[in-house]
Length: 155
Image (cartoon, rainbow, N blue to C red; front, side, top):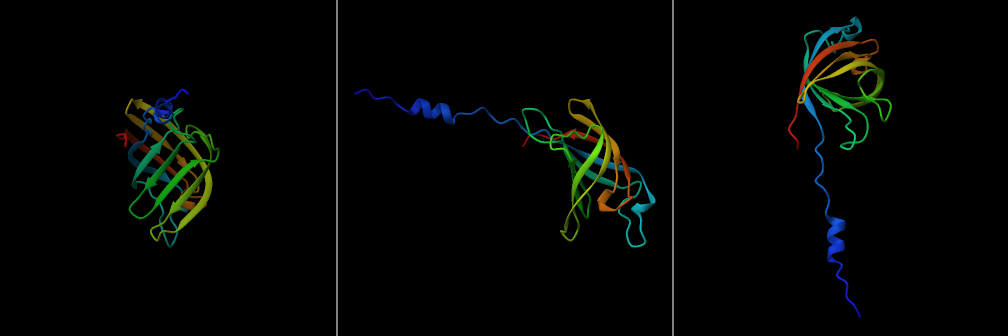
């Protein structure tokens, strides 16, 4: 009776190539214009001159699945946006799905329209400019912004 060692087969099945790092850019978002609906008698949700942190994750074939997405982080709330299409890209116009996290940890899902231009300036620098309609789930609050982002180190 011949004995066959299963060790080479087990090693072949358990040895994998190193995972590719997710591509992520981080930087600042600068609000350049807003519509009057962004300021109400009780709250101003956004105004020109506001600055927030922005994290952008482009969908890169073979590295990560799904659409582009980005998160806007302020001192008191956060917003995560991605295209309505599951394979979408934020490099033009369309509809988005968003989740807003307020300062009291309330989660609100909503939708709106966007118009973005993402430009690869250099290997490690991206700029994003655009408009977010119904920002922060305020109907008619349209925010125009500019941002400069640098490639974040792989985690």
